[in-house]
Length: 88
Figure 1 (cartoon, rainbow, N blue to C red):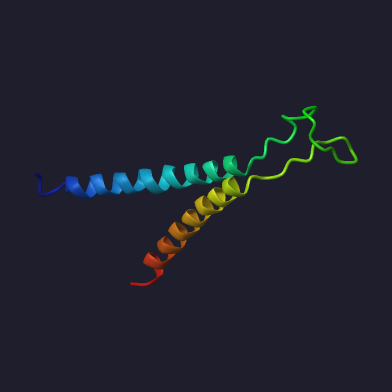
Figure 2: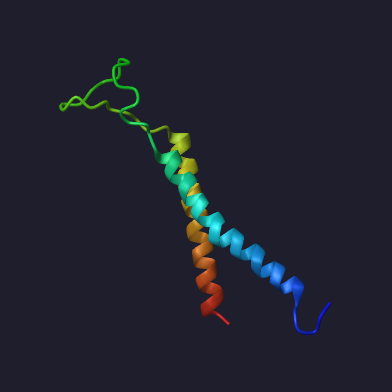
C-alpha cells in the first residue's frame, strides 16, 4: 500500500462509476423495452384494427408495472444523488 495512492478508494469510485454510469442507463433501457408493445408485429393475426388499418395492441399490465418500477428506481437514485450533494 502506497501513501500516495489509496487503492480501496479507487476501487470504490470505479465500482460506483460502473453502477451509476452504466447501470442506471441500462435500467432505463430495460424499462423502455418493457413498455414496448410490439405494435405492428402481430398485424393480420385477428387483432382488432383501428380506422387507419393499424393494429390496436394493449399493454400488458405486469410489464407496464415492471417498467414503471425501473423508472422509479432510476428517479430514486437521481434524488439520492442530489440529496447527497446538497445536504452536507
